[in-house]
Length: 185
Ligand SMILES: Cc1cn([C@H]2C[C@H](O)[C@@H](COP(=O)(O)OP(=O)(O)OP(=O)(O)O)O2)c(=O)[nH]c1=O
Picture 1 (cartoon, rainbow, N blue to C red):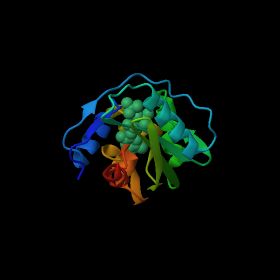
Picture 2 (tube, rainbow, N blue to C red):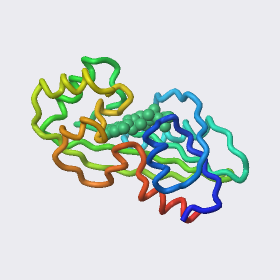
Picture 3 (tube, rainbow, N blue to C red):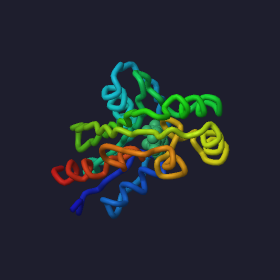
Picture 4 (cartoon, helix red, strand yellow):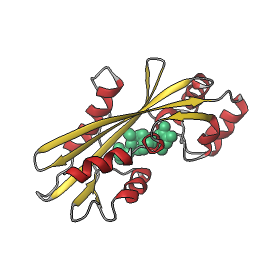
């Protein structure tokens, strides 16, 4: 159990807050705007780089443990962040249909001056859906704050027919692995 530890979540994402609640009863939230540009070239290094940037922008007290995370979607050699427009969201979803893609989340944890990090990958398979389904989704749900232009926790679920790995990693926080790490700190 994560008892007696002062946990701080460095995230404004309501989903990450909900997910952390599943494993930690009480925690603080601190968040600063982070420039999410990156220089790394592999998905693993990119999520780690951005999560670490988020970590370095937040100040904590000596007895606090800070957690930040970053999630990206990786398809056919391309990094997919949050969609920039309706057209971008539609194109992204259409090109990923009937195929596998990967969701990577990088998590950084800071205690005193030590930074721990880990990366979790989940494979997701999209079924063969119609253009009408994509249009309905993009016009009726908020896909703009989600990497890869979909949320597995909303109507985006109907696009998916198989996943391999941690479901919560796709939502933005791999809580099973995070729990194991926090227990040891
Ligand atoms: C693929 C997918 C992504 N997402 C979300 C998770 C992340 O919140 C978001 C990717 O953006 P991130 O930049 O990882 O996070 P954020 O900007 O929402 O939050 P913060 O930096 O304050 O922590 O996409 C879902 O909610 N469901 C999904 O199925």
